[in-house]
Length: 221
Ligand SMILES: [Zn+2]
Image (tube, rainbow, N blue to C red; front, side, top):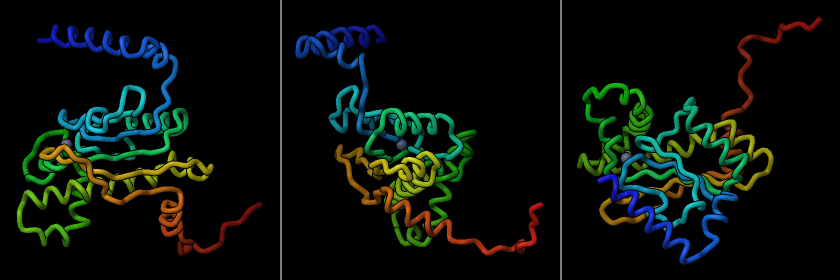
């Protein structure tokens, strides 16, 4: 029942005040989290609960399958605020095994508008089709795709102008890719961290001098 939620809230707030009479005064005055969490909307993967972080310690954005669409104004607004105003030090993209979004992206059925949302997952699957095709069990294949999708989103984030600008200004900021196991409650580090030096080497590759196919005939007057 909904009234249970209010009852629980009253008890929780009272317990906090008992532990620390200034708890809410301090929290309401300022939030200075070190972490931005980008995770799946799945109700079984709540950032604060599984990391043991308190209110005020992690800024959170969640969507279906923890995807980074680079035209997603919601995510970009969160990212810009977290990086430029809160000055977070770590951005954690966290997926989870058994993700329904990953499964829906690959099951071959039409689901509606969500099919558009899930397209980056199919892109990741296509880019890694050689590796995925060597995995026999469908469940294992989907779980590997959960991991690969996180890695892909870390890379996508690293290429956003928000992160590129922050690194250019010398801000200490690292993106991490993690995955959570619904069956054991444990987080795993996918070892795909991206900081300013990793991003710079990727950028140098991306921005290698292009071949000038238009010649150099542009004149200035
Ligand atoms: Zn999920």
